[in-house]
Length: 108
Image (cartoon, rainbow, N blue to C red):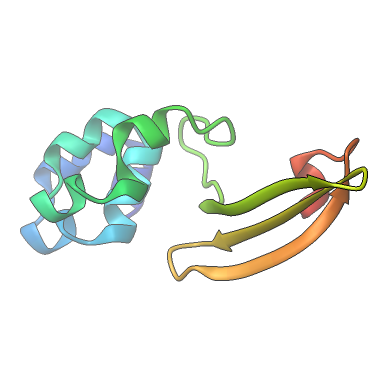
């Protein structure tokens, strides 16, 4: 896991079970979105790990760990943002509301 955090393309040298492991592939793709080319077919088809999804992640910088967050619902209601998100690979759900002047940092 540490090897792909340092160099996502190290995934090409990983054993087949690691190329199929979602966490390992996610770390590799966070480091270098082109690493997805070395993943098992099942991971290449995983929407969470798509190169497009990871490449546009504004919270991930090279070598960083970033929160995986899937927005399930987002709406503006009475001057506030109402949200429901799934956190992490396990999909633990979180919901609430924030003022319109809030930033993503306020979720922390």
